[in-house]
Length: 381
Image 1 (cartoon, helix red, strand yellow):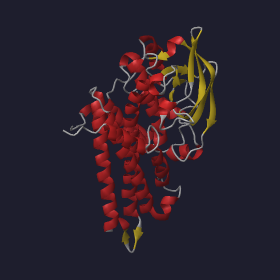
Image 2 (spheres, one colour):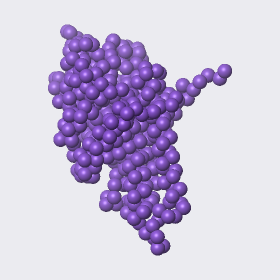
Image 3 (cartoon, one colour):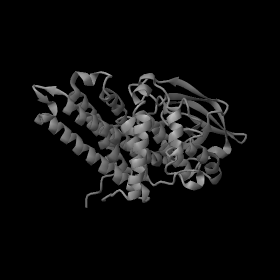
């Protein structure tokens, strides 16, 4: 499936690149070093429509399709992967499922605030005993006196410290696995909802990663998202879009590694000439550029298929797997090209190295992506 960027895509690309270069690149190292939440930059991103990219204009969003979203996400991640993570979660893991499964009342209540940046969303699926096996989660939801009562602890929640709205998955039915799960829109101000431990992380430090604790949390009956018992289906379908967003993040990190390396090897001199003249160095850059382009093609294909309403579980997993492993490889290669300087905070490649690793882990590890792909291989004819 060939994918070509339209003039509109390139306009969006240029707009977001200009924003990211002006607003994010100068502060990215400081955000990382101090684990500082980029509140002001997020406000400016919201003014450009980046907090509700695929949300229709009727609900206050920018009305973009998935390929435009991916193009924009790459530009953000190239400047600051932590910032892109915040934006991606709000878009793909919160706005998207509300748009797809929410009632009209839920859309009217939540999407305008999320798309405008007035409120921020987070996604609560993983638990201490339910990581890769997410459908085995233990958080419970009991309907009592016209309210849902949720009890349990969610971990590794991106945006958890700052979010206003949590999309929470809980076990509402006695059936095991995905069949017993439901999804809920939980405002963090609801009685019984609180932020637990805030993680100290290797990378993407300007985005918070926390526990969300639900202690008999009282949720209005009308805040059930979709049908009762449909939570497993909602979670898996939502992760397809989320994985495409992670692939776009990996593209941005890989591109940052390539650009930084290409510039550095022309400046760094050894043995009387720039190290960029050595064949081994030139081949490393060639490999980096080739893998980046291959990852981008996979990612754009998955996004285009999603935009056309086509099944894309396999394609999203392929994009996420290849792009994330490419980012980690490129970051490793970039640090090696920088030598001892690459191991210091004087240059950004050590940050790229730390940021890249999470792309191989969250929203499904590389091992899980391979499992998903293997389950969707075409049957032998």
